[in-house]
Image (cartoon, rainbow, N blue to C red; front, side, top):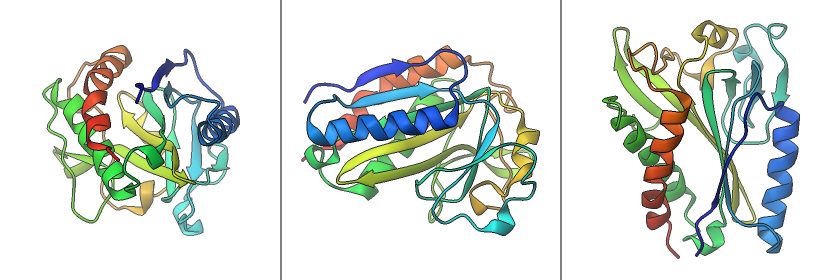
Length: 211
């Protein structure tokens, strides 16, 4: 199969625009009119709710706009300084294994972060990528995907250098552990650096998603 298109949007992308575009591309992939795509964006400050979001976990409903996302998971923050990657792949041609896909996303992020001396890891029973921080395990990347008729969309968010106080308006992903960022860990990697590392490690994700 051809590699997915690598698509980086400059500036801040409004969430409703992103959601509509994702849905359109995913429909095109299903119909054979669109190629697979990895779409990298930043959003203005906002919260999204997944299909398992509990109302009590929206601590401050007036702080930022809240959008229903249609993906799995609970409440998540998006904002400047956070690399959001929307991963739109034809899993019908790549093994039809959603668990393998999610594990592949985790490994992809971990491999990219390792280039900057950041030791990411998974925690069994929890989705995302974690690091050790002075406060103990802390989440540095969140994952929330949807697979519809074997086409994936939504994806993951890596905290490069966002305002971590913005996460306090929700219980992020319904978890009590703190959220951190690469900047808070002392890593000076830029958004472009992170994008380049993700691009270098994309082939490993695609290699594990085989029919």
